[in-house]
Image 1 (tube, rainbow, N blue to C red):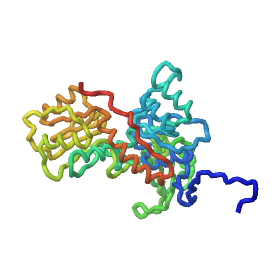
Image 2 (cartoon, one colour):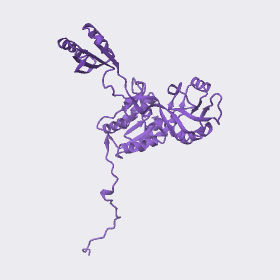
Image 3 (tube, helix red, strand yellow):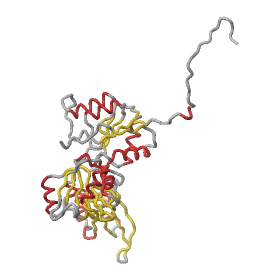
Image 4 (cartoon, rainbow, N blue to C red):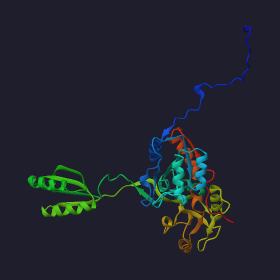
Amino acid sequence: MLLPGTQLVRRPLRCIRALGHLPSRSLMNLGEVVSALNDFASLSLAESWDNVGLLVEPSPPHTVNTLFLTNDLTEEVMEEAVQKKADLILSYHPPIFTPLKRVTWKTWKERLVIRALEHRIGIYSPHTAYDAIPHGVNNWLTKGLGACTFIPLHPSTAPSYPAEGTHRVEFCTDNTEHLDTVLSKIKGIQGISCLTTLPARVEGEEQTRVTLSCSQKALLEVVALLSQHSLYHKTEILLLQKPLLPHTGMGRLCTLSEPVSLSDIIKRIKSHLKLPHIRLAVGMGKTLESPVKKAALCAGSGSSILKGMEADLYLTGEMSHHDVLDAVANGISVILCEHSNTERGFLSELRDMLAVHLQNKINIIVSEKDRDPLQVA
């Protein structure tokens, strides 16, 4: 019952969802995201000439809610990232490659840095680290061939082994006082690590075995020191080889489960890359109906990786004119799809893998403006 003089005011009802049913996304700070990205693909696997990792960092603290994926960071793509409120851009190709001497509005790459910092957007690039990893760009490209097994054309080596030093030096002596002098001098040489001494029996005599790791430069000083103390003739020097990482490295050599005609391979690749056209050079003595059993591939620019490899087919984005002529003369057919067309399709798979890797804590979106600059007119 209403009291006299009161009025009933009608207001639209608002439905309030229970807090327990709201979408749960916990934000990540930039350092956490970068650390997770480095765990996903170690930057140590990138080529030595490459420029990878965090390239542009807004002033801290910087929270990441939206990660924006692109193959190439052009100005058009940057504007898209701004509109979509990206906090971090993962650009497969590094937009900063050659050093910038200044940051002005004069060149497009300088403008990218300015726009990123103005809108507090970080920029991260993995590039050739993603080429090397087993769950990366080159493995994705193999799917265009159909069922096949594959190995890296140029395997990667374990980056952290040996931890220090390029050589191992071992020698034995039975002169304890003499040994103390030698060890004291060895410890004073820069580049020495893992120095150990253990008792050893050599030809029935009790001796002390000394083992150490050292750099190439330190090795020269160690050899000179041991020669001065008449120990060099008892010395073994081993070159420390870094072990190969399984399924990791540049390019892929693929063996198809069943031979397939070149014409059918072309159809498969077009379908996988969603391309209406590719460029083709048919190997000497081959036709479109020639069987393809073994294919060597490399996403992007494959000349240096594919050169000299024995295969029925080379698949890559671009190759030099003369490298194509060499391949054709050796009876190897060549398919060129333009540089970024052999990479860009990986971004959709990357989005799904990173969502799992980052435990769905942030939004991950793929650019809709990113595209290869070359078109068939």
